[in-house]
Amino acid sequence: MAGTPPRNAPADGCRLYLVTPPRLDLAAFPDLLARALDAGDCACLQLRLKDAGRDEVCRAIDALRPVAQSRGVAFLLNDDATLAAETGCDGAHLGQEDGDHAAARALLGDATLGITCHDSRHLAMRAGEMGADYVAFGAFFPTSTKDAQHHAGTDLLEWWSSIFEIPCVAIGGITAANCAPLVEAGADFLAVVGAVWNHPDGPAEGVRAMNAAIAAAPRPER
Ligand SMILES: Cc1ncc(COP(=O)(O)OP(=O)(O)O)c(N)n1
Ligand SMILES: Cc1nc(C(=O)O)sc1CCOP(=O)(O)O
Ligand SMILES: [Mg+2]
Image (spheres, rainbow, N blue to C red):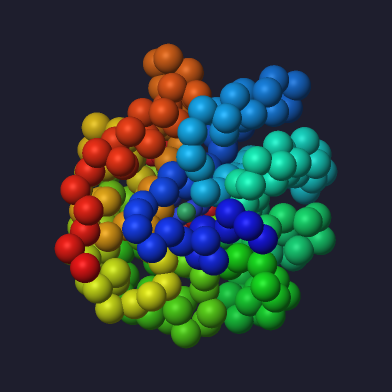
């Protein structure tokens, strides 16, 4: 699927990975999302509705998947590889408590599997062995979106990107103002919620600000 982060990981640069707000109004959100995605470059959208039941998640997939995919933005589902495979998503993002990663890999086939690895080299290498298309590290900064229990540093990104080909995603409290060291350390994607959806001038401006900050950041030494 064009636009899926791991398969499309640009050799020459870090890209934005957008995660939805934890709760959203399906009457208004598709338009807001379309305007945000039209504002700049975004590799991927992850649907992350932590408090929603299956029916609500399915309605959100139906409403949002076409908005992303029609723009070449990969549409990933958080937490549920089975539902992702059943509903035409481009893949799934799974945490350490989100089921059997090997079974998810087999189920997803060519679709993308991303795995949370917190601040752990061990979890990241295991995810790689399991066939993850990307590994995600975090949280890099304080975040009000989630009660993050793990705290990652740029050394992890430097280590991973200097040894492994599998792309790495950085997440947690990332903004246009603080992201430069993550880009310089080798993050392939910066995953954000608040920096875009809570931007004071609206999500489209949030995407523009993140794109500009990524473009202005020093490149990793590789
Ligand atoms: C890109 C990305 N990285 C990490 C996470 C966190 O996943 P998880 O640990 O399963 O926590 P929840 O998102 O389920 O609260 C993520 N969703 N996306
Ligand atoms: C969903 C999520 N996972 C994290 C992790 O550390 O694994 S931090 C996080 C929240 C990201 O939202 P924001 O960009 O608003 O901080
Ligand atoms: Mg999860």
